[in-house]
Amino acid sequence: MPHVQPPAGPAAAALPDASADARGLAALLAGCALLLGLGAAGGLLLGEFALAPEALWHALAQGGDGTEAFVVRELRLPRLLVGLLAGAALGMAGAIIQSITRNPLGEPSLMGVSAGAAFAMVAGMVWFDWPQSVMLACGTAGGVLAGLLTFAIAARTRLQPLYLTLTGMSINLFFAAAITLLLVSADIEANGIYYWLTGSLANRGWPHVHLLWPWVLPGLALAAASGRILDLLLLDEQVLHALGLRVGAWRLLFGLCAALLTAASVAATGPIAFIGLLAPHLVRLGLRPRGGALGHRRLLPLAALVGASLVCGADLIAKWREVPVGILCVLLGGPLLVYLIRRQED
Image 1 (cartoon, rainbow, N blue to C red):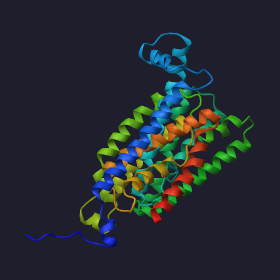
Image 2: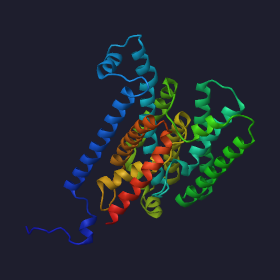
Image 3: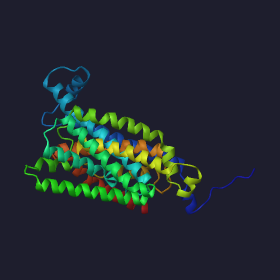
Image 4: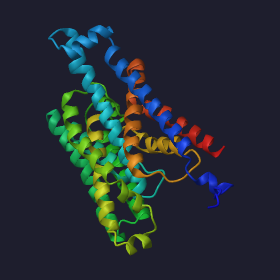
């Protein structure tokens, strides 16, 4: 049997190279491990009350009621877990939204969820004096309702990607304007609210962890298990209808999953921008530097891992410079994405 040579030229470049794919995956995992290791070690050891490694190990493994144990278990550990959960939720939500809207610039704010959750939280801060658990539930509900409003308006077009994107942008702008109007007209000191709106992990405790994990972990598992359906949703509409796939229903289901992930994250940390946009592209550029499709069974969990790593690493710098982590995600993530895109074009 004659040996068949692989195609040469541009067509061959579009085919995924197994060795290059493995190298890209190894580099991506190594980068995430480095960020997670530095972020976790620095987040638990560094601060106004510095700890030695043996004191950290004693506080984590053996417990105790001393000052060191309190600092680690009640202040630093929940902050680290909130950052990991929120970053993973935003990374996966961004990958889902980019798929169902077929928009490479898609991110959680594109569906109006981020602004809706932020509006609910700000309204609670201005008008009510609710307990923290009620505020977190209110913010999550506000984000989900904003997402449902986006889908309800776009339902007349059977959730076509273009109209879904335009509707989400309109809802996001509406709630962003409502937040500004609320703060301008409120007769309160709003500096703390403006700080929260930049996205921060400061003063996050176990109630925030308990808010996040019941939504984030099942959402991550559900989305990762449905990667094949997301792969199909990237096909042409006529092909999908010929296959008998209920496109609108699946887009609605995945959109609600992304809305829950985003709303819980925003309620716990405030709007941390750019993670949902950057994380999926880092995965694609790392594993497919010359272009080509990447299955969602790999994209979704890796986007969650990259999102968690980015937030964890950025929070280490945020603690060092005492700035909100959301600001650093934008300042560092924007140039990084531009550099990666330029490198891909070269």
